[in-house]
Length: 239
Image (tube, rainbow, N blue to C red; front, side):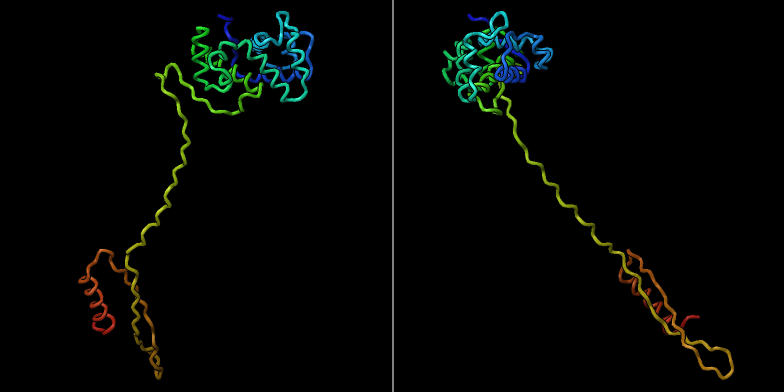
């Protein structure tokens, strides 16, 4: 069995270091070098182990003879093709098992391989798998943002599926029903009054009476009210 496959949390450190080495490859690449470059803070040793595993750095943290021609490639396509060759060798057991499909294996299958091959935990196996996917992206073999189904050891083997749910449309507010309270009834009654002055004519007055009908009244109640108005006000029968 080969050495256990390297890993780290996250992929930014590996991607940043490869980009930096393509621009300028120092004579030695140490943890101090990465600190000065601001690459993978607190994770420098993990990134260096990955670079050593795929043959970019030797035991003395120097550029290997095989890595020299690769990182001298200016064209991105040519660089990706040569970098993929560096990755394929150290991961030969994975490629022997899956062939070229290994580049695009779902994350759960990669985790299963690394856990069984290296005897690692669920967390380490996942980090080994994501590290390989990072190298696959740098090699141009895996498209950025490819979805992967992950099966957690605690999920009982069930796949976790994320579904997009459309927001529920809220019903338009219902306008309140108009009030059924009867409107006031205005009754206009002409009343004549004498001025009291000798020889003066009568003066016409208009009296406006407002009646509020009860909302709970029935027809008999309304008839009684209007009958009383007619007898006591309009006909002048009141005292």
